[in-house]
Image (cartoon, rainbow, N blue to C red; front, top):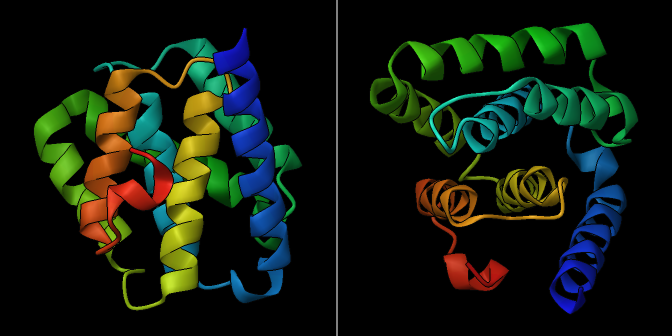
Length: 151
């Protein structure tokens, strides 16, 4: 139970940090990288089940930072990324990491995208090794050390 509490506290802290930057997170690159990250984490085990889609839909609907963008647009982008991953995971992952890397010149956006990945990964109370691995890869794509996020 202590691990779950630590994860919950960590994701709540990240959400607070994101809210503090809300007005700085309005670019198209951030929007795309965020949805790419959500898809990557959801498909970390090689497939995307309905509960993972529901968690992402819930995040899109309730996350105040993502409310900078139309929800239907975010959902469409997420679904497009998921399609890339479910068609050919390895090739899709390369393409998605390229989209995530487009925010690396804006450190606030890059960190926010990583934080969104961690929030999505921990949404079910279990930030598993596969999810951590893809978030770690995203860290490298945006030139941030994974140790900054205890990955």
